[in-house]
Image (tube, rainbow, N blue to C red; front, side, top):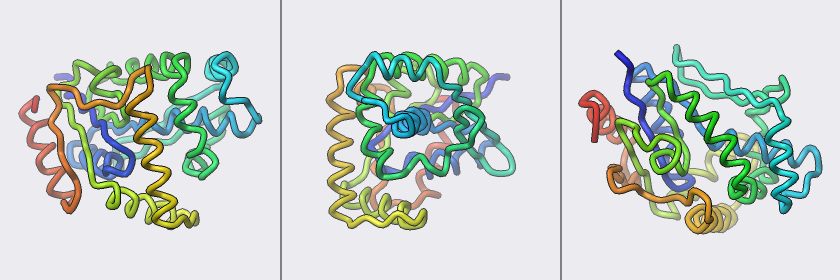
Length: 226
C-alpha cells in the first residue's frame, strides 16, 4: 500500500524542519525540505555573481544547473542538495544566501521548475515535504496537511541558535528583522504565496515540545487524514 504524503507549510523558524525530520524518523518516511532547493539556486546565483533581479537570468540558471536531492529515511532522515556534483548543503544557510532566497523564490520560472521536480519526487508516496506552498501548490492532494506558526520572538531565538551552532552569529534583532522581511515577501508574493489552506491543521509551536507536536501529527498520519 502506498504510504501517505505529509505536507508541512509554515513561517521561517516555526519548527518545520525539526518536526518533519522527527516525524519522518518515527514513521520511517522520506523527508524533503523544498526550501533547500531554492537556497541551492540562490547559492549558485551568488557564486556566478548573477543579477537576481533578472527573471530571464534566473530562468536560464534553473534550467542549466544540475540539481539533485539526495534523501534517505534510515537510520536518520536526511536531505542534501547536490549542485553540479558538489554537495552544497552546508553552505545553504550563509547570510548572503539568506538575503537572495526571497527574490529567487519569487521568480515564477524558478518555482515552476522546482515545483515540477517536487511533485515528481512525491509520486512515490511516504514523503514528509516541507516548504511554504506544499499544501496549496505542490501537494494539494496530500493526505495530511499541516501549517506551523510561532511567535516571531520565539522563531528568531530558534533561528539564532541554529545559526550560532553553524558558526554564524547574529543578534536577536538582526534575525527578527530578517524573518519579518521573509514573512512579508513569502505572504505577499504573486506566485504561490504562503497561506494556510482551508483543510490544513494549524499548530502554534510556541512553548510546545517537538515530541508533543510530532505525536499529534503522527496520529493523524496513521489515521490517513487530519
